[in-house]
Every structure is written in structure tokens, then in C-alpha cells.
Length: 228
Image (cartoon, rainbow, N blue to C red):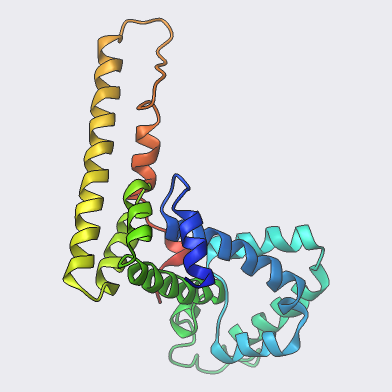
């Protein structure tokens, strides 16, 4: 098993989708190293400009936080100055003149978000390796005992699976996990209804956080991770 396979095994011990867990760690490392090295590297900034990339709103906020933590404000100012010049290049000069066609087109359509591109590449890699290792009895057993996959990565893993057996394994495992969550939620809702007149209004038990796990199970990565 390679390094990523080992990391996926560790992620299966978390109470969350293992692919999402891995991507959260990748995102954290991306901004750390981008601020530490990339933001001050001319070649990295030139590559961003050549691809017409910027940052989506969620990742722009993450970058602002990372710059604040690392103190790389001067490098951030240089990078954003270059990006502003690039984004303004199609606009008419102060002298006026006709506005070029497409001058106000979304820059997202041109190059997208640099962080999302990196995340997309990692995501495809993780999903492919995850689907590959499901043929390993030990890995598939750990998967069966885990939180399982979120909706998005369930579909991606099934698409990446090379055999009908692996697709069936995913379907059966995820159906069982959904059933367990549904039953826990049913029990929790029933306990609240039964004690609706209780003064505290709070109920403890293994099923009391099932709604939180259900939200994580049903989650998608959001606009900061949308393709294109």
C-alpha cells in the first residue's frame, strides 16, 4: 500500500468522509506552503497569471487568514497587484473608446480558482486510489466499519470503480450506513416527542448527534470547490 493508501486507512478512523478528511488536510497544507514559498516566488505568480487564475471567495478568505498568520503581507501585495493588472488588461484606457467585447466576462470562466484546481487534482487522485483499494479485504473491512462516504464522493468512487463487485460493495455499504443513521434519527426524534414536556428540552445518548452526522453524510464541498 502506498502513502496515500495508508493515509486513507487513517482517515477511515475519523467520524467523517475519508476523502473529505484528506482534502481538508490538503487544503490546509496548500495555503501554508503557498504563503511560505509560492506567494513570494515569481515563477509561481507568473504561472497563475499565465493560466488566468484567481481565487474563489471562500479560498480568498482562507488566503487572507493564511497571510495574516504567516506575515507575508508584502508578497501578497505584490501578487495581488499583478493580478489586478491582469484582470484590468481588457478594459478601455482612460482615454475612452469602445469597450471590447467580453471585457466584463467572468474571470472565473478564464482560469478559475488556483486553490480549487489543486484540490480537484488531489480529489481525483484520492478517489481513484480509494476505489482501487476497495478490492483489498482489509481496506474494504475498514470501510465497512467507518463513517463511509459523503454523497459526492460516493458517486465519484462508484464511477472510478473498475468492477461491478466494487460498485456493489459501495452501494451495499452506503445503504447500510444510511439505514443506521435513519434509525438513530428516528429514535432521537421519538425520544424528543416522548419527553416534549420536559423542562430541559435536551436529550443525551448515542443517537443525539445523529443529525450532525447526517448533515456531514449529505454534505457537498460547496462553492469553493465547484468545478469550472
